[in-house]
Length: 348
Image 1: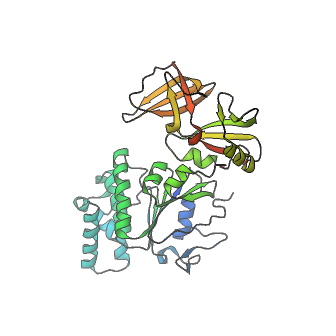
Image 2: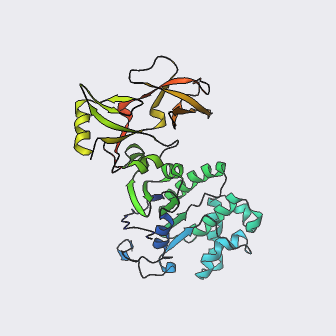
Image 3: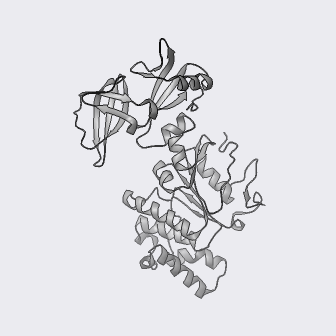
């Protein structure tokens, strides 16, 4: 089994770069290869123009922050943060100055005398961060550092980490399976699956122009809806998804014919672009049953049952319907994504 398959990435200086993908995608392996904790069977790793393959981890000038914090349980926060400086035999007064400086930056001066078991998860995470920052490394490597932090603190820490990286003017490589983290924190994102890099781009690029069905379904919350369809031509040209049809203008039809490998396609629609009507609906609308409703305050997610499938639509909070109601649903052709059913690659 290949853990990382021919990955080719160039990460820019002072960039916050995200490796995003499901469990087993190869994200942490890439991080371990960069850190020197694992050795590549082929290929090369460069920092600037310097080959790193044979250099041990301690000589690569990287700092790694793990999901489990990896703090020394018998040491207080001060000693945990100071540890990498003590190993490098920094003078005591410089160690003290640097530890207090970074503790102040992360607002954890009050825990410096506490041991890990006396701290909350968020405090332990910030101590682990402080230990990485105090070394002033060339590269920060983050392996899902917020996955053990509660939801409220995670939102706060996302902003803190982004700001910190910009203030420190250093390069950061951040592994996550959480696409909200990726979208909100990264300058660029590499989406990975089965050891391969599927797409690299800015968060908004990947959201608006997913390269294939996997990226389209993985990025976005709630995820994209997919409708298998066929390209048809009678008197008019249209996409036939059985439950609904979408008319095509000549330009779009020509583009699909040029790029698709067959007439089998998949329409992708973001939940915000799946329009739901309880009364007057546009032509080409279709009927669905309200399966479940999730009110979130600022918006409502309506789960729609069509045949045996459930689709999600995001509507305004004032939308009113009951479970079991029949509603009309409309797919706006200008908002749809289109994929080749056989290759799963984006056509538009």
